[in-house]
Length: 313
Ligand code: RIB
Ligand code: CA
Image (cartoon, rainbow, N blue to C red):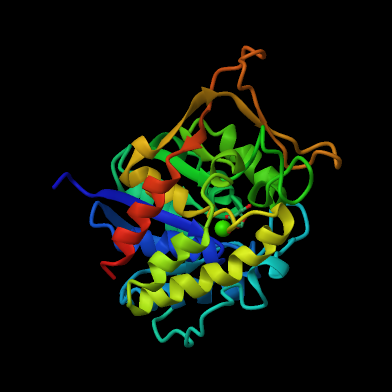
């Protein structure tokens, strides 16, 4: 087997975050050095607890989970209980976690871990607002040159936004953090709504999880049954977009995705387009590309990978 890829997952669980974390925990190609929680879908007190619930569901209570930022850099926290439910993980009944939350602050864990490794060893996988990563970059700018890449779910371009007509939730919640990250020089692999809206949790795909006949399969089906209802109503589709697992799936099978190396800038001035990811897809600005912007996905291949891997837990 190839050498394991060392990753840190930054997340705001969230049902789709949960499936992404399960996929990562089920995949031996990846060494998860730690999971840092951030405020987003629900407040930090819930996202850090949800991260621990998911690790225990996967039978991995030894995973290091840290709490990070409690609110965005500048703006007031905007949450999404209407999508994820009051707990942030509505759907299955998941017991209170017994595994501990680490004492160290998530931002300090990010800085310390990246600085303790050789350059190019650590990949950051961000599934929520980029507050923790931005704070780490401000705390220790040297991490920019040492981080291999950031694989992130966030943004949208041809697909528009899902919070406002132009902004996707992760970027909208903390546009100033996203601006810092996209200007940092760290290579970014971007999974925007343009890709995730093509990964729909259809009834057949959810059934494949349920028929795994395992606790993880059952919980995953219940998480997705709950999570999809909001987007099915909004988009009139069979199933809702499964955003965050695209980040982990790219690490495992990058050939499932295709896109283009573009310059991406973040709107932080206008309230009308606040948090928009302005993707120079047609290269009209002359600005140097700073992100690999994904636009296509082999969705059948994606769900086959997900189902095969979750069957291992
Ligand atoms: O817009 C989708 C993103 O916002 C996903 O990461 C979801 O979990 C929420 O955080
Ligand atoms: Ca998320």
